[in-house]
Image (cartoon, rainbow, N blue to C red; front, side, top):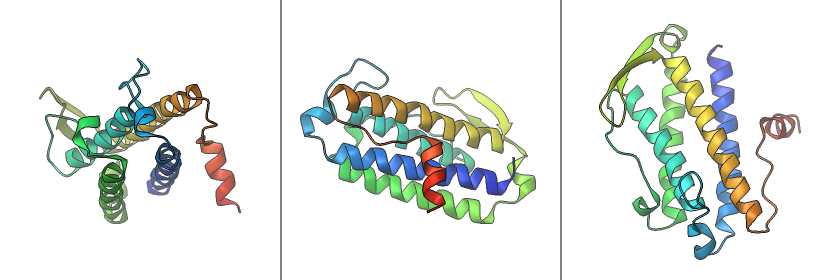
Length: 165
């Protein structure tokens, strides 16, 4: 995997995350906070977890290992969550613009939320972030479907096809 590949995966992640957020914005407050008894409970809780995980990993790549992650209680509403998420995306894009191939494959140490030390190549950490978002977007889409609402198509295939237009 090279820099272009990981940049494309993060572009896809942002594209699909925005679709999920757009769909969530059409829901009522009650629907956003309904506990579906999966993942992080509600659509808002799962979206907050997704954004929080992206913040945690970006922080680690910048040399800081946070000891907590965001929850639905972290944000006053979905608009506040979206705004903070945009800031994370912008910071990550800046990082990717200056990242060198040797840095991408270099070992990078961090501490998890519990403070335990780990080391993995940066590229593997980045692949995890993309995969983590895909997992939880699927849960958000499932929760939206359970509400009787048609969810957005967030698969990589749809992103790739949209890029050809």
